[in-house]
Image (tube, rainbow, N blue to C red; front, side):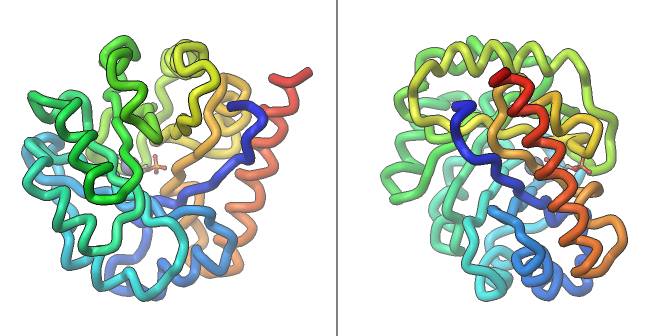
Length: 230
Ligand code: DX5
Ligand code: ZN
């Protein structure tokens, strides 16, 4: 996957929720490739964010890919509401439900791209037998629940192993948590091609700041990719 373009997916968790639609429009215009939407239920993770009505409300603010990261237990009954609300990619956690294979089939049956996310302590072998049902693997590089946490360095080895495991399958490797200028080159050198960033994108609070932040993360990510290819 190292030949793939690097994609930057700002996480709106770090945006100003009082102006959510404007913030989505601002990061779209600032060069975001995807918009990353963190859905939390207060059970699977110790925080609560938003659900399908909010996704539906901001759908009009951007035509970019809506990358919906479900940090919710027993996600199956919510897949269709998120698909209807405008999700393009729906990612469930391998740890959150009893039947991952079934959840992934259900996402694809809704006509959406299927992703699976792994918490830091979950080995990549957990998804070895569902690789043919996946469009994206979201490796958490912090424990999910909050923005602004420190990147866990041991995850670099997991990115490398995941990259080796998927071989030439057309599966994105997305990383989420603590991605900033210092860690972006490390994750792309290890094999990630989609970088989620919350705090590192939304710092500064203006569209021009977002443009500079996304550009700087993209440049740093490309440096890592070039070092991997060398
Ligand atoms: C954490 C979320 C992340 C979070 C990343 O549970 O999944 O998407 O917003 O935030 P930063 O980039 O600030 O670590
Ligand atoms: Zn996320």
